[in-house]
Length: 221
Image (cartoon, rainbow, N blue to C red; front, side, top):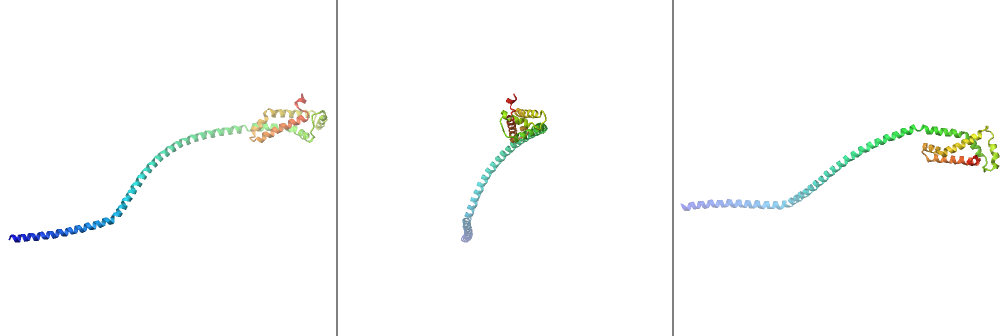
């Protein structure tokens, strides 16, 4: 009986051994399969690891860039605010300058009539001696010696009595008036410098004609 019982236990142990051996074989086979899969997946895992590192580096770099951009935006916002303040000041200054310019234009427009009237009166003042100047320009040039004195009587022909004295007096007064500063008024009315040169030339021409005709201040004295 004891032998039969031992045989039964031995058969049970043999069955357990076979079952455990089968399980061990299955585990070994699974281990081998996992090792093969690990060897196959290792390069892909390494590539994924490298990509993760690159993404981390790019993320940190992007965070630094965002910080710099935020600082730049704050700085530009401050500059924009200061520029707005400067622009407002410049607009106020421009408006004040525009008012001043309008006032100056109004003053100039109001003062345009007076120089034109003065210029018209001077032109009228020169209308009478114009004929005398034309006659004088047609005569040959001579000196102020007594030899040229008879020509004076010939020039006086065709003019009423006392007309020569009035004309010579008009020339002298016109010359004195231009020399006293009337030319400056006309030059101020005309912004071009050529008008000043023309007035100066006219004054010199009248002075030369008076000297040629013997009407210099020395001869009048």
